Image (tube, rainbow over all chains, first blue to last red; front, side, top):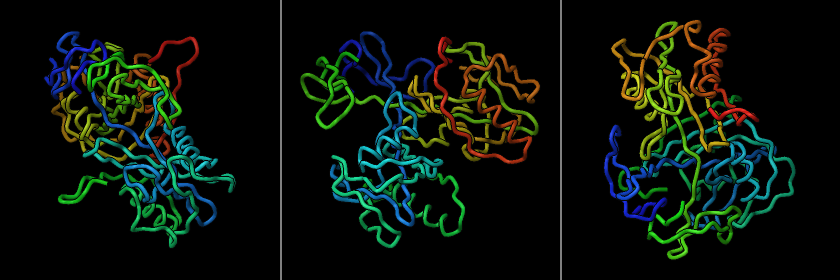
Length: 183
Length: 183
């Protein structure tokens, strides 16, 4: 951030009075520009034994597999974002279930939230941001080609829970491993 | 938003290619400025039969009672934000428990997340943003002077759960009631 989005003057990094962290503060109008984590929301969509997976048609992680998910928008609910993203990325209509995973990614200032959901019919197709949308069993999932660690975590929790017959909310923090690439 | 925070030129509201919503787009450098919901995180802190309540020393809702909570910062976890806010607003050290309530407020583009927690000692005092910090029983809580509806919801869920002896994650959406003030 270089300029004030309110008045267009330059901003400086400084700690405002009563605050404890440096913020971008406008040199002219004094507006403090806070930056906060973003919420990514998606759905783990079941159809009988299978899960709805999407292959990404966009960066990052082009060509890798993920659950339908994306950035939550202003003026929507978290569950509403899961419904919207599932329709946008897989053309799929779902009935939303409970929140299933909640993953902190502090190194990229994101929270990833995945809901369980049930696919309502088989009339789905990949949206613009997906190369493919496909229903897969646990064995069919390309485990070495999963786009994001939060998706890998969520899928593994789901299959473990399904085996033991009880679904819980799973929460974790995934920090960047030393010496490896951010995913 | 009037100006591009990257290059300082004017921005226009337009729907970018492949998008479905209007965004602030820079007329000069083309940067798209997305705006997303913010996450407010706090703690419902128990000490024996009592709950740690704070009376607000800042607007909005100056003088009203709330749970220690505030905006999640970049590069922290959601649980870390609950610990930090509880220390900032009530000077209190806590052991964090599970996520307890998750409240969508789409009309103000916020999510409020409250964790259960246990107070570690009685050496606490109001921080700069609090007039008072006090341990209260259910009967002592000033129910007509609660600052935010998400806090009222969370407290009521908590005392109901405590009575029945089982604590669950509570999720809801609180939209603005027609004809009343936003809280």
